Length: 147
Ligand SMILES: [Zn+2]
Image (cartoon, rainbow, N blue to C red; front, side, top):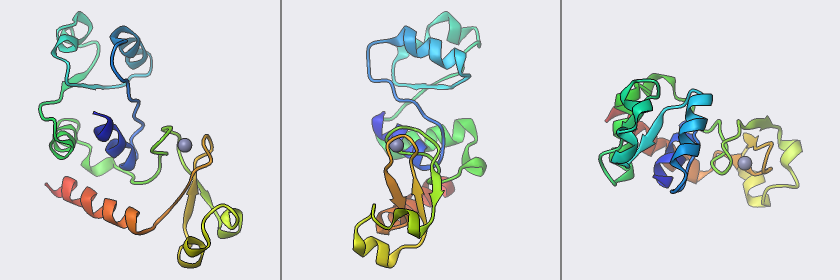
């Protein structure tokens, strides 16, 4: 599920990742922030808050990230609203656009020479740019969207 969370962030969706034990804490946050729970845990699906429809939850069927993405995109109709590379993959913060001058001393010189568009995470200060990794991910994303 960690990979799925990362992919959702790549698509630009505000995604929190909970690792493990505190189901009640996760449910409380989901209710407070109007989030949808994506889980592989059938116990969560049996909770009253879910069965009553107060909280939307999706039981993820596959353990393959590609199929998980497909299921989430299909069941939430995400394909037309995605905004790739707008959220930090590490801390789920919206990225801010930065000029070349602003990042000059922050990125490796080989990157600076070849790239002109940069985004920065205001929380962890990580700089994102449209390198080859980015292009590879965009290709993969398009495949998810088109099925
Ligand atoms: Zn960050």
